[in-house]
Each structure stands twice: as structure tokens, then as C-alpha cells.
Image (cartoon, rainbow, N blue to C red; front, side):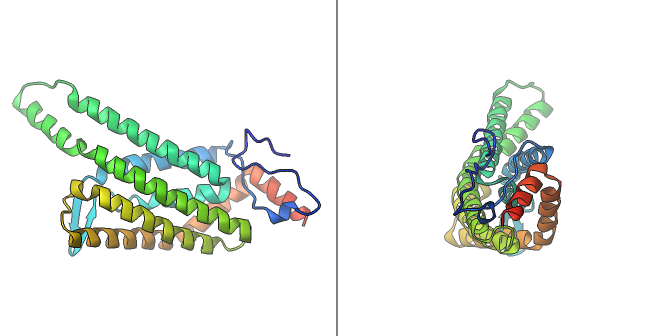
Length: 251
């Protein structure tokens, strides 16, 4: 029996009518792999929120400065959910945005601190305020979008794994990514639009459509790598190997 307080997913005793084979397998997050993933997610969220305050025009495409990095947060979320379960994924989401809020609080303090009065310092302080001042609205957009989108993403991953177990990983990644990114992008672009200079409905549609398309295609393109990373961690996570072996032995 697993201890309810320590494991990301509690597994009740196996009965005659329910073998371990019928339930998905998840690892404890006591090893260093989960810590690395969690740290990377927090860093990605903070940097994406800073970059997201800059509007970017790439030919006909309207986007923001965090567009190239943010898909990594969803890839890390997929890895967390597949290996450690829904509870661990929620913990990663909460920690990522707690750190983002902490960063915004620090930016406010930095901007509010009295600066030097020489010409260079006055110009430099104005640039800092201009660059970091609007980040709180990007954080709000990211908080609403990522929490809703990543929660949707994780729920789809866990529901599909409960049905297919170790099979169908690519299907889980494809389906969860599409729906999760759609939810995230619509919410994020709606709240963040004024900060990045998007003022018309046409610009918003361009911003949302190409943002969704880009992030989704990047994640799809990374699926071969994501699969290999997941396979590597599953192979080297002791608790995952033990529970998978136990599940297979009771089949």
C-alpha cells in the first residue's frame, strides 16, 4: 500500500476485481528529476512573462517576445503529468506562478526604490520601469491562461492514461496539447493584448491564431524528443520501475 501523504497519486490496495494492471502507474517525486523539471518550469514562466510584455511583428504575424520559449513550459507539464501524475502537475503549476508573482513583487520594489539623480541613472531607471512595469498584467494573463490551459492539458493526459495505461503516449501528447494550448492562448491573448499593443479585433485574431498555431506546432515537433525524455526518466525513476513491474506481474 502506498502512503497517501507522500505519493503524488494514492494507490489503494489491489482487490480481486481490480488488479494493478488496470490502473495507471506514477512515480514518487522524491528523486532529483522532478526537482529539475520544476525548476525549469519556474524559470521558463518567469522569463516568458518578462518577454511577453514586448509586442513582436514578424511579417504579417503579431506575437510577443515570449513566443519562442513558452511552449517549453507545456512540454515540461506533459512530462510531469505522464510520470508523476496530476497532483504533481498541479504543484508545478502553482509553484511556477508563485515564483512569477514573487518576481513581479520584486520588480515593483526595484522600480519604487529611489534612484540616483544623474542623467544616466534617470534614463536607466525610466527604461527599467518601462520594461518591467507592465509585467504584472502579463503575469495575470499567464496565470489565468496557463492555469486553465495546463489543468485542461493535465486532465486529458491523466484521463487518457487511465484508459490506455502505458500505450498511446503520442495520442495523449497530441490531444492534450491541442486543447490545452487553445484554452491558454485565447485567455492569455485577451488579457495581454493591451500590454503588447494589440488594439483591434483583427490584431487580436492574428495574435491568438498564430500564437496557438506556433505553440502547438512546436510541441508537436518536439514529441519525438519528449517521448525519449519520458522514456529515460521512467527507466531511471526507481519507484516508477517498481510499480510498473508490480503492475505487470499481477496482470
